[in-house]
Amino acid sequence: MVAKFTNDEYTLSIAVSSGLEKVAKKELFRLGYPESPALNGKIEVKGSLIDIARLNVFLRTAERVYIKLAEFDATSFDELFDGVSKIPFENFIESSGKIIVNGKCVKSKIYAISACQKIVKKAVTKRLCDKYSVNFLSETGSEYEIVFSIFKDRAEILLNTTGVALHKRGYKNKVWIAPIKETLASAIVLMSDYYYNRPLADPFCGSGTIPIEASLIALNIAPGKNREFAFDKWKGFDKNLKKRVIEEALDKEELSRKIEVYGTDIDKKAIELAKYHAKNAGLEDRISFKTRPVKEFKTDSDIGTIICNPPYGERVYDRQEAETCYQELGVATNKLLGWSKFIITSAKNFEKKFGNKADRERKLYNSEKECRLYYYYGKKGD
Ligand SMILES: C[S@@+](CC[C@H](N)C(=O)[O-])C[C@H]1O[C@@H](n2cnc3c(N)ncnc32)[C@H](O)[C@@H]1O
Image (cartoon, rainbow, N blue to C red; front, side, top):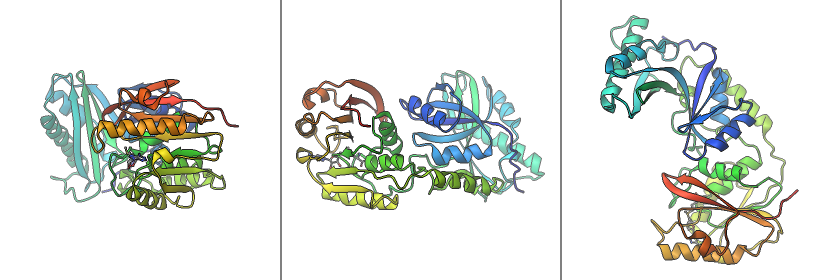
């Protein structure tokens, strides 16, 4: 039996990586969602079913969109079972739905994650068996991930509408050394002064993430327009909603804009990969990728924005090699007074090696690693 999603107002909980809450809030505001508080890496907004599709397709800096199904006190397994049993899962999950339960317990009386997983699963299964009048669930259909989060004895039960996290846009399917996540790359572009009428350069472009995300932003291309989400496979979820959102996304594209986006890297293989990823993203004619060491960075333009993620000197490159990169970046770009620079690294002595004190810095995390984004402002463009 197919679930009947009701077109009620839902609380949608948006998960963002630590440090990106502010930029994600701004994105939500621009998409028309009222200012909402960000707490512990999540932002809540109200929305109906179409908002689930909109948020998944349009958000650049968030990781997942959940439907918040319930929130209640859970100091014991019984309370957890009872709280979960009251949730109308039959409104979301078809009778053949495959149920996956994940979650976390933090600073709470119940803390055994695997025991909580079993209890939540038991409560969901019992509820669905009762409602569909069956003795067992076949679980042969689409996947539904139910997530519990128990923090200080308060449980939240969520349904993952995204599936695989939103940083997986679909265009980057080959790996490169220390790539930056698409969500973090786009957040840095949004935090920077980049606008489509300025040139943008990444002199350590690796597999191309920053130039690709910047181009998507410049051309107003929705990051999720080509990917599939968990809700796409749910039988009861109206397929027309996603179609309408994709139409809205295509309508908003600004493909006639002329953009100047450059990616360079010392490694020929990286450049081949960056070109391949740009092609997957439909941007092969929009970005110039070239093999070039940073010390040969050159530009004909008086103004522009450099955004980059150079080696940190921790894994593939040693500290000395990373520091040489910072020095060479400084020598090549510090004289370009009209160019702004936004550089993310975990190296504590970055400013010293780069040879210039940042106008501002901000703490960010790149794959759990604490980093700083160093801001150097250049001349403002039009
Ligand atoms: C942290 S990775 C950048 C990853 C990239 N943001 C991505 O998403 O794939 C650093 C890059 O710097 C490049 N690199 C190292 N030394 C360089 C140099 N002297 N000049 C230019 N690129 C260099 C490496 O080849 C590598 O691709």
